[in-house]
Image (cartoon, rainbow, N blue to C red; front, side):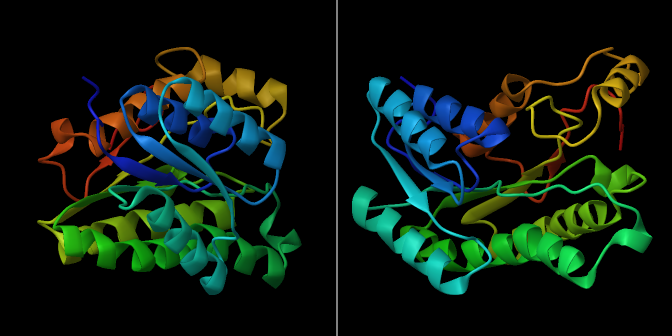
Length: 247
């Protein structure tokens, strides 16, 4: 028996990095999984085949989470394919390291749109079917930079800080039927972080655990919050970060 048997999940930005590992972990625990992506379609299709091989249903859905029409169509497609939606993981995100003096209005707006508008739109679409069923789990992928910030990551840190507060407010609004929580990882070595390798080594050495995280260090936290084991968590942010931030 898996901890997510009979459940269905939608993971935005699910085809690479942490999202990919979450999709595989959910499938291994018995969930059917919709993998949202906007680029890297081959990775999404390959992930669908891997989930199928685990005996679970899977669906790759291309959609820009910042576009209202595309989010609405995505959620409807998932409901049509699976008949229900129990878990939403707002994982779609972007990173860009740049000085504040080099950050354009377009850079700032895109960062806020992907992380905040995307989470808002996805939540707004999944809440009605979850409320109709009387249950649901929403998990937002945040970051330890929501607490600490980082030079040259002003826009990203601000977006993730907003997502953390969004999580707390929405949790109060939707409880008790729908539980909303967040996961705020530290620097996870996914291959997509723009930091140079020398800086990554410096950060790893500064951590109490003396290494960067891997996606498989983080995915079990999502499984926990999505499962019945996380039934008493509401508006919480769990931080698999190697000890970098201890809130």
